[in-house]
Length: 358
Image 1 (cartoon, one colour):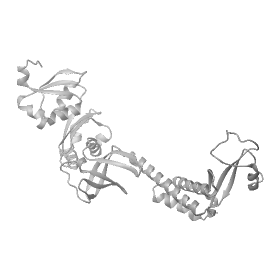
Image 2 (image 1 turned 120 degrees about the vertical axis):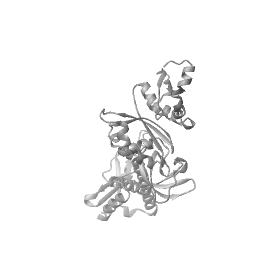
Image 3 (image 1 turned 180 degrees about the vertical axis):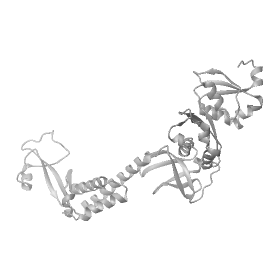
Image 4 (image 1 turned 45 degrees about the horizontal axis):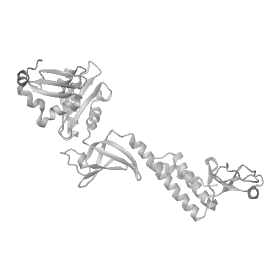
């Protein structure tokens, strides 16, 4: 018999550690089994919780050996006992059966009590780590709103959930980021791994998926699937290029995403430290897709399309060549990544000189 306080304490431990009662019971059961093994010197024990009677029944287990020669087929997981010794414990003991010997927790010696505590803490901590890992794993590739706790030379220490503190390396932040303690910052959880000490969470502000998550968060039509992000490319901190497709012909992908007065796209840019967001309409027509992806530069024609190799040539006005290519080739690079097509660009003059017909 134990006090009702024991079962109330189980409830309290579960609540404090965000675990279920069953998980805490399991950890305590493993501790009791470890103590029972130490106390009785047996290999197996059984624990029976009887909450309705405020009882915990603990049994050490022995396998009663048959008379005569010992068979090699005996189950080696048990501690063996002769029939004669078994009958001294229980006169009804029979050969070939498992004899259970009851032991009270109050009978545990120092070493057994130590093993109980150590095993209980070991199993409980393992369950806590696994539970936390499974919860955090569900957040992988998701955006969270974090709070800056500390600023170090190479990283920010941030809290992404209650009592979940991770490191945001400065190499994973944007060039214009300069956070201070207490600042709120949106980050993407890029990976969650289980390590010896518990889950390790990796976060980033440079990952392309962060732009997608921001779009989903701030544009209801994207969140509910009316508008779909089909292609996206990013130079983190400078510019992103996003290809959008509407699954509703009555919804304008660009207008809905930009928002009234540009409110939505400005909000996204704000969260990314002023990063520019170029939007273009996705098309299943290769010519339209390639032309759209090169916006804001106008495209006169798209030719030399090779669907197998996914290569094409875009012809642009002479005066728009630098815009189509972009500074250090950024615009065409992002267009290539977002559209999935390798795009060569020529001005109208060069195209005529080379005899390209379009």
